[in-house]
Image (cartoon, rainbow, N blue to C red):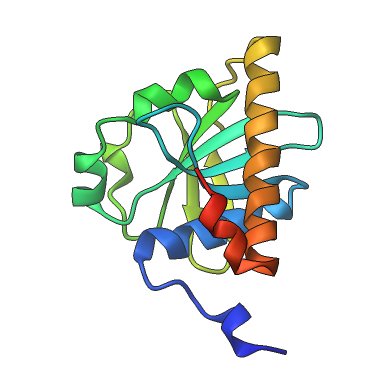
Length: 153
C-alpha cells in the first residue's frame, strides 16, 4: 500500500477534519472537506447522513483560529445542524451556546453536544445535496486524473 495515503495532514485544522470525517463515517455519514455552499463561504467539513441530513462542521485548532472566524453564522442557513470540532486542549467555554460540539483528533471524533436541528427547506436541501455530489465527484475525478483539475471552477 502507498504510504502517502496514510500520511497525516500537516495543518492542525486538517488533522481535526480527518478525525471528524472518520468519526462521522462510523455514524454512516459521508463527508467532503472545504465545500463552498455560497460565494465567500467555505466549510471545513460537510456531512451527508443516511436520511439526507446535512451537517456542517467547523474545525478550530485553537483560540486564535476561533477568534478569527467571522463567517460561521453564515453557514447556519446551509445545514440542518452545525458543529464545532476541537481537540482536547481547546477552551470549549469560548464556543457559542446552541451549537454542536465534537471532540476530535487526527484519528477519530466524538459528538459531545448535538447541534440543534434547523431543517433545510426542500429547495435548499436539493441545492446542497447537488453541491455535495459534484464536489465529491470532482475530487474523485481529479484524484484519478490530475489533469482534470485544469477545468475546475
